[in-house]
Length: 203
Image 1 (cartoon, one colour):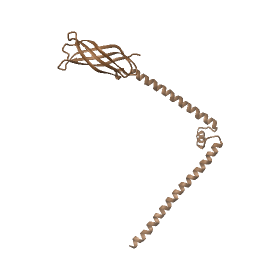
Image 2 (cartoon, one colour; image 1 turned 120 degrees about the vertical axis):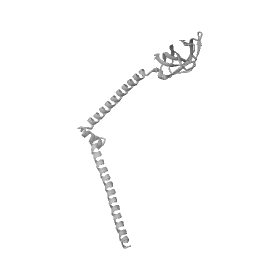
Image 3 (cartoon, rainbow, N blue to C red; image 1 turned 90 degrees about the horizontal axis):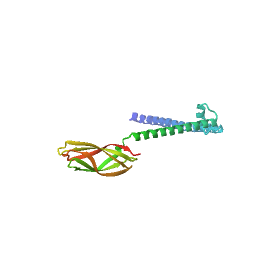
Image 4 (cartoon, helix red, strand yellow; image 1 turned 30 degrees about the vertical axis):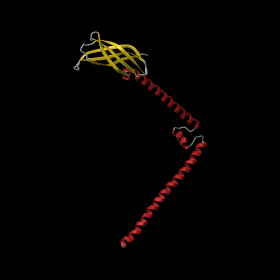
């Protein structure tokens, strides 16, 4: 009991010392902040008297070996103009790279076939196609090359034909083509389909 009674006051004194130390540190930080602010105010005032916006600007000028505020501002303005010019030059280069990539991009990537059907003609040896070509490119396309395959009832490919549609599909539009004669096919062709393999810009 006596040990506990003695330990209590000791613990309280230790805690009081810790609190006092913490308060001293906080006070020191506050005082340091106030002194620093006072010094900055004085430095800023001196810098403005010398023609600079503040002490930070004067210090930056001094680091560059410049003492004249006009010379410093001229330097800053010239550097900003150079950065703007460089940024514009890079923007133009990027635009050229994008345009070149667009020119090289296969136009068929933005083209699709839909509503496709076909029928036999010419004693069952000629295929007539009906289909719609959609052109999602931002430019018209022409001379669409179709790769058409035909299969027998067993699923075996019996005919394969390449056919070019010498026509134009406008930009961002679709066009319907009917009764396209793709040429001779095997008379046992039971089903078929086509894909676009090439096309050219119309302009």
